[in-house]
Each structure stands twice: as C-alpha cells, then as structure tokens.
Image (tube, rainbow, N blue to C red; front, top):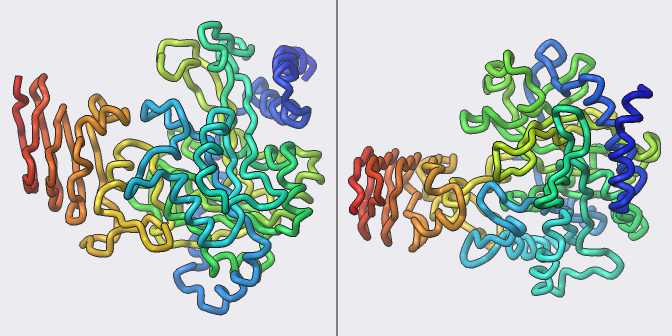
Length: 469
C-alpha cells in the first residue's frame, strides 16, 4: 500500500492546487488504490441472480398519490445537468438544445418544476454551470429563498494507463480533468453544502433524474409509495427491450441486496448473459428517489466516502483524437448506491417515464411527431402511434452524428414518424419538407454525393437513391 500512496502524491498536489475539498481527494484515492491493486470493478454472473418481479407503479392507487401530495412540501426536483453532449459536437450544456415546440430541455424542466411546485436544483458540471444558470434567469419564479438553483459536481484528474500517473496535455489542460460520473452526486451534495441547506429547510426527499430525460416528471403516487414504505432509496426501472440490451440492469447479490450492473462492469465473456433481456428483465432509468436524512446518516457513518462500485473506463485523453494518450477515467454510477442502503427498493415504471436523448438519433425521434409534449410538460409517446414503443432511428454516423450535420440534413425538421416503427439511413441524404415515413423505412445512398428526398414524399420499405453531383 505504501507504493500506491507514494504514486498518489502527484494527484494530491494537483487536486489541492485546484482547491478540491479533502473529501474529494480521499474519495479519489479510494478508487485509485483499487485501480493500482488491479481491481477492474467487474461484477460476475456467479455473484448475482435475476430479479423476478417488482412492485408496479402502474397499479399504484389514489391513496398513494394522496400520501405523495402531502409530502410535496418536503420534496425537491434534482436534475443531473453536467453533460456537454460532446458526442453530438456540442461545446455547451446539452440541455440548451431545442427539443420540442421551440423549447429547450431546460425550458421544459423549468416548467415541469413550476407545475409540480417542488424546488428545482441542478447538479451542473464545471462546463455547464454558467450557461445553465443564465438560461434559467428567464424563470425568476424558480428562485426559492435560501435554496441555490444549482451545485457543481467535482472534477478529477485522468490517469495515464501506462504508468498510472496524472495525465498531462499542454495543448488543452482542461482535457486533463473529467467529471467522475453521476455517482459524484452524493459527495457533491455534501461538499457544496446543498445537503445541509435542504435539511435545514425541512426537505426530506429528492427526486433525481437526468436532464435529457423529459419523461421523468415528479409522480405523486411513486413519491407516496416511497414515503409510505419509509425507504432510504428507490430506483425506477422499466422492462428491458432489445433496444436496452447494452444498458445497466438490475440484479440481486447472493445475500438478497439489489445491485445495479453497468455494461462496463460485465466481463467480456459474459456479455451474452448481460444482454439477455429474458434473464435480466429490468433496466435502470436513472430516475431515483433519495431520503435525504438517510443519505446524511450514511455519509456520516462512512466519513463521507460511500464506496460505490468503481467503473474503470478506458478512453483517449482527447475525446476528439482517438490516437491521444490512453487514460483511465474512474467513475461511479449514482444508481449503484442501491446496494449500500439497507432496505433500498426498486419499482417498475411505464416506459413513458424514460425518453432520454443521448445521440442525434434519439433527438430526431423526440423532435418528431412520434412524441408529444403534454400539458404537464412531459414528453410522451404519441397516442396515435400503432406501437407503444418509440421509433428506432438509426442514422449513418458519418453524416448525422453531429448536431450541425443533423440539422443541415433535416432543414425543415424531422419527417413524420407517427406511423414509423424503424427509420434507417445509410449514406448522405437530405430530407425535404413534409416527408412521411411508414412502417419500416430503409434509405440507402451509395453515391459519394448527397441525395435528396423531395418534399411531401411518403416512404415505406427500402429506397435506394443516387446522389446528384
């Protein structure tokens, strides 16, 4: 252990120079030791078993909703807003993208909060703090006396894979750091003073979800279930489909405790079992309910270090340059806390509570008429769709991965996808106005120049196009 501690000294010096709190340095040291000792963070099949059934939120009655309404005065809405959307070519908060009816994610979240009457709190990153607060200035009604609108998650040094030293990148020193995953929420609540502030003002419960999931509104019946059963922690899960095979799933440890396993924690040789949606039926929506006094007690008992399972991500130092120095990013998932809280629970929720936007494929689908924005500012599947599931959109990443490229190729907005089960585009294709897609649509342009779908075209089945020089 002495050698490991000596190796960590450069990290301590660097983090202290950045003014990071001691508890953050000690938490990172906890994971660095695991890395140096060869821990991979893997969770094997022999250690877990499937979850067969769960309470179903679709069957919660009005009596639970009444309990939830009574608890609203003690509940906050906490949104994870640290993402820049770099995978889509963005350099500011992804939540500032326009998503529906001219409204951004943050516009819709602000309106959800005002309807629910619960205080809105953002967990921003050092990249999203300023832009997001500037955007929320348009909603002065959100300001609650004594409760800041946000707190900022920490930043952690990247670790060079070759020798476990701190990464150095003089061309852009900011790339030497990364936000350590949404599991940092617990540490950041503590070090920012937000947890103490909320407790001092009588708040006991937090509903936590991702800013890019506009299906995650504060549900009174689920809050009522959480409160009535006195749970310290509750995870919302949904039925896995073939589209969810790669996402984290719920399981049980052999001692009966619920556990979350992410794909990065699965050994490569067991990936088939990980992706078996019949065996592991539920995936984590990342909608969580926290009992704030229980969280405070847990942090105090563990000297501020929860000890969430480590996720060892291997990345290039510069995400835009795959040939840059290979580094480790030691991250944690906030949902992994489910195994730490004695008596933590999970509840099955309908798919309507899960409408995330991770890629331009997702964004096109949510922007389309396959989704509607309800009067309560919730994004939901259009009830006119013949299917309860959203359309599966698969756009050629060579031409559509970046937001600017997407919008250049859909200059009049998305095609109609209400009656579309699947849209696949291969090659460079620009869509005209009022295009309608039906059933399963596959568009293939094998030419080196762009092809154009004319205005008012109705598409169904396979279409092979020739780009116009």
